[in-house]
Length: 416
Image 1 (cartoon, one colour):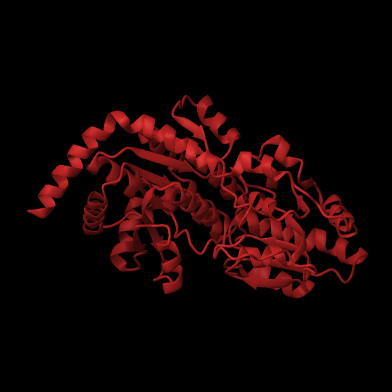
Image 2 (image 1 turned 135 degrees about the vertical axis):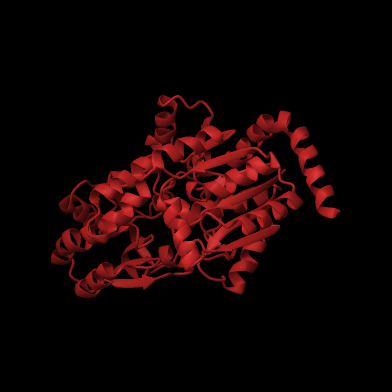
């Protein structure tokens, strides 16, 4: 099977949850023998070593650079009359779309896989013009997620979040309708869409690499003496992560330091906002911006935390933490969407006092924690990708012959 993935962001380096989810899936597809073409958006040309890493698993990589010109700005403003903000930034020019149609036509995929809703217009055009089935991977119930962000935003961010949630409900339902199948990140989200009358949805959990904790396939082992007592890893710019970290630094950290003044805390992640930089400096918390290795970060800590207070779908950071056999303290939101039996591996706290007390207790423990890896693999292992590939093949079989004829005609026309 051949798949063209339209990814809303470059999947590597996998420095935050959305990228981790895509990158793990790309590696799983490749491991299972799928030929891959990846189309994704970038602000600037990636480092050569990052492209080389992607090319280990991907046969053809197509990078779309965000346009920053007067023409593109005017075009985006006009598109805001129909589409949400993040979708408009990924709508390409007619000449670029023509080029993409040619590249995808020559690759001859069996499926167009839309990974994240924001690249939807490109994926829809490719699917329709080349008559290739569209599969959608849902990362959230996007319109509800952005409504929550809008409700909690202030100042200029309020306007931005209004544009993000504007038209999102109609657009999201349009994508689901046009998809042969869509795969949801959590059973709860899937049940929501089923209650809305959608019957083409399935559940697909995130993938966790339990045996190899490194993107470079090295054999890092857990450090005997971790440098930090408490570690958080996640993007440091999205509203929900920022709010969670601010809450942790202002409400939880003072309680911790009052009891354990020598506690060493690490906050790590992509593109930290000024507020987080300032709070880390004021509280004496170590901040690492844009780390290249999640394994290195996680190996440096004794207790992991997920203090997010709002969100949707599944927190990829929570799932990723499970691979390291270390204690985790999370809010209730941080474990939302996870199977009940998996939630048992988390120490859940719903207020600042209990969050701090959980951490203090876990730091006092010396016995090693063991997770049931077999159980976790049954939920988050590569076999889930293997199962959906069989399902996709079954659903698209009736369309394959017709698609093959269209692509054959396309290639013939291109070669003339």
